[in-house]
Structure formats: structure tokens, C-alpha cells
Amino acid sequence: MAGIEIRIDAALGAEKFARVRRELEAGTLLRLIGARLISYVDESFKTRGRGSWRPLAASTLALRRRGGDAPLQDTGRYKQSFVLETDGRTFVEVGSNVKTPGGLSLARIHEYGTGPYTIRVRTAKVLAAQTRMGAWLHFGKEVHHPGVPARPVLPAKAVAERLVAQVAEAALARASAGGSGGGR
Image (cartoon, rainbow, N blue to C red; front, side):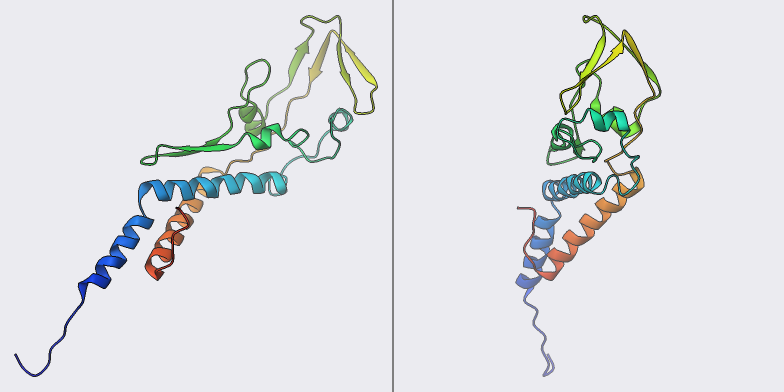
């Protein structure tokens, strides 16, 4: 050989590739994506649907158990019901499985809203509800409810796709920069 020699230590490159591979493993990415989607849901509750939710009706405010005017947050049960599930290989799912006493999906009702509906007496003589102040409101044998407005907390498909891409890009950037992954 001529008087010039170039030596490459492949161990450094192999170490970097191994770090990138670990950071981009399906399980790691799915947990990071799930955490980002849960964060989006939390932010939806904090910002009242990013400012898009209709305010509560006066009748709803009168029946709040704990007061306040934040929609979907009187008891906290619905907000706290959001969880993520993943098989660590192919999917991550964020949602709520809370049901109404009648077995309907509470998440579906609030995410998409409802049209008007009628509430009828089943076992009592009349429909009634107690206000936070202790007074009873009597409604009769049936109530014609105007419907529940949509108050979505989950991201729309395009937003979810953007969030997934951001998480993947951030994971790749962290791995490439040599930083430690936040997925473990």
C-alpha cells in the first residue's frame, strides 16, 4: 500500500445502530405513542377540548356534585378512565371503557354527542334529581332531553397520525444523538 492508511473502527457504528434499533423497537415506540396520546387526552380535558366544547347548560350546573363549570369533570370518573393498552408488537390503543348504568359507552356519548332523547320513569313514581344545595327537582314521568353535545377528547385521525410521526421522529433523533431513550 502507499504511505496512507485509513482505519475504521466499526464498533462505534455498530453501537449506534444497536442504540437506534433499541429505541425504535415496536414495544418502545408503542409505549411512547400511547403515552403521547394519553397526554393529548389530558390536555383535551384541561383546555375544554382546545376551546371547542360548548359550556354546560344551567340545568347541568345546578346538578353538579362538586360545583365548577368544567364539562366532563364533575366527579373525575370519566377523565380518569382513559388507559392505554398495547401488545408491545403491533398496536397501541387509548380509550375508556366506562359505561352508563344502562350499558352504553360513556366515551362514545361524549366523543360524538347524541341527538334528543326521552328519559322515562322505570321504577319510581316521578323522575327527580337533587341539586348540590340539597333541593329536589321533580320532572314528572318523562323528560325530553335535548341531547348531549359532542365533547371529543381523542385526537382526530389526521392529528393522531401527526402525533405518531412526531413521537417516531423524536425517538429516532434521540437514538441518533446518543441520548438515552425515554421508553424504558
